[in-house]
Image 1 (cartoon, rainbow, N blue to C red):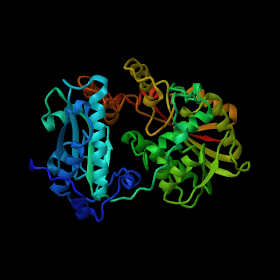
Image 2: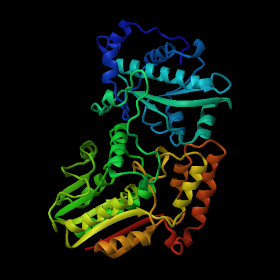
Image 3: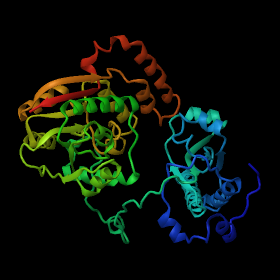
Image 4: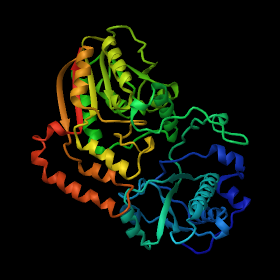
Length: 458
């Protein structure tokens, strides 16, 4: 890239994208873009305009202690595919770096870098580019090696740019009165920080999930091996039932409901959710219409009106009394002989061992809850015998159970340590090796498997 940076003027902005855009318009119309046109590269002069905008951001004592590593080469982006999400999709990657020897006091390095990123995003939007401020880095060691970063230089974030291949709508915004305090802080009801749902009410779970879905148009971050097993089991079970009326219990992000729909093409699909905003989030991703029912402890459907109900990783999110209430309601609306297809995480597995480890690492807040992606909110694994006992007490009989993953598969090993620094990040390699070596014993170890999939009959 040329060392010369072209100045940004109203004329250059107008030349690139029509009339100049006001700051207010840029702020309100900018969207996070995660899909770019693959055959339309970004010209170098536009990249220079992004960097020029970054340099005008405020920094501690105006020291401007940033480094910006720009990657446009396709081969380099391919090398970074496992280290940085979307690395191969975006034509331009800008890694915002700082030197760890300077400006860490009062988080000045983070504040300055954040301001520079926001300048780039707004400038990029005004030029017709789509930007994505991405904090996730899966493999920092590989990123450092590919970029030849010195040991004392750290990457704070990746900013991705290209010409947008999507036009997301405006996301929901909080009412300013809910977060503004005049003259001093005025306490309001607060959500629990505990990752255990026993410390939450159903209303608090609803509020938290509603807040989290503002993060983006979809949640597509499952562990691939886990997702494929659950989707296949659900599709096969639904195909065998061939339901006329199908009810999904609390789909939340809608990830699994979306992928199960093709298995029941003729079914009249219903789902219950805790809030209308979460339901709208689900509905936007579904390929066909599904009818939403508000859930507040009761399902607004007649007795014996449903052929099949599905519940994928949702009992783990609920306070214990609400689990019983949801299953009781599911039993009521199912017709005699109807099926409940249920998936949950076992407390008798390695998954439960991960929780105290994360607690010791300081990840104790609900933000860092060890859930099965993309579960949002509090989450605890459940003992299989307890789940079976509750379902039996409600009136269900277990027809069949399938178990998977007595040890972490390779992709989960990568997923769980993706944000850790070396040498902790290297723990993925012995875990991956152990999974491969013990594969012949997995059938014997089934009782201690993480993933529990079952069909219960009314």
